[in-house]
Image 1 (cartoon, rainbow, N blue to C red):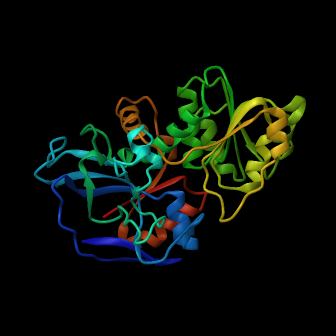
Image 2: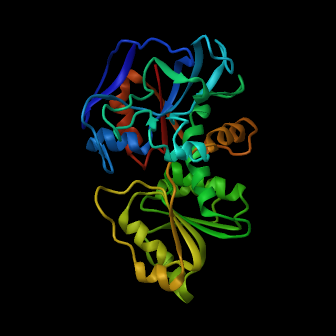
Image 3: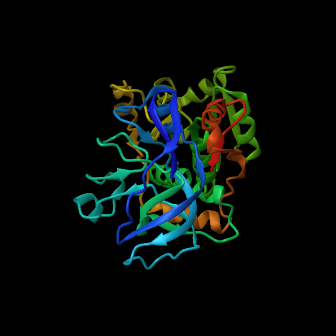
Length: 345
């Protein structure tokens, strides 16, 4: 089978790989659509994501959907011909975190397309994908499979909004209007947020955010004072979500969150320690929490997409064949032209 294998930064090769034999509880899925994530871009351009550095060739991709081709003898939930969204999380299901329902913190997690462990976990940008039965969630035949592939980033956003706590009637700020930031805005609105503002350094994604119904968009490169005005009276927002992975963006949030508010970190920061204003956290009793991947939210995301509860159309930018993967990655990195680029074979 052909797969998109990253050998080093900016060394992505579409090459032939041997297929692993299917296990008794596994499903072979014919790849139909795969979204290029911000972590894929970081691996592609830097050879790493945060503290996870590439140490061997790795198939990229974890936002994937396709059609079931074959199933192992123990599989009952899906059958050949079923269209599915593939959950890239493969928790062990036996450790203490898995047993208490926090599988995203699994001690033995194998997440598609991740260099967090060695040997690395190969990703989903391949003609066929082997996944465990519980990773395959059926979608309606009428759902475009590139929409189904958006279940993964939507699940990330739903988990972040869940970590934000009660949002009904709350004022929410999101740093970053990339795919995750945009989906966080849509999820926050669905959760009842009364006012949503989003920031970015680029005008084009902010324009899309306005079209998606965000109440205020702030270009912090062109008009930083528009965010700074929310620092008055010890802050304005009840909740802020950091979806850029920028230490500077994070630092700006604590000043605009009111006492007793909450800051949620879901963007992957650069390697090393990032300073936080501990005295401000203490004096204002601001909760600072992390949001890492997702767990049961993947099924919730598929249901939301299937029922039309959240429309991902604002983030869908382009589809390109895997043979043009380098071009697709460069397009996905150009935030003036694209939010979410999908690949197909």
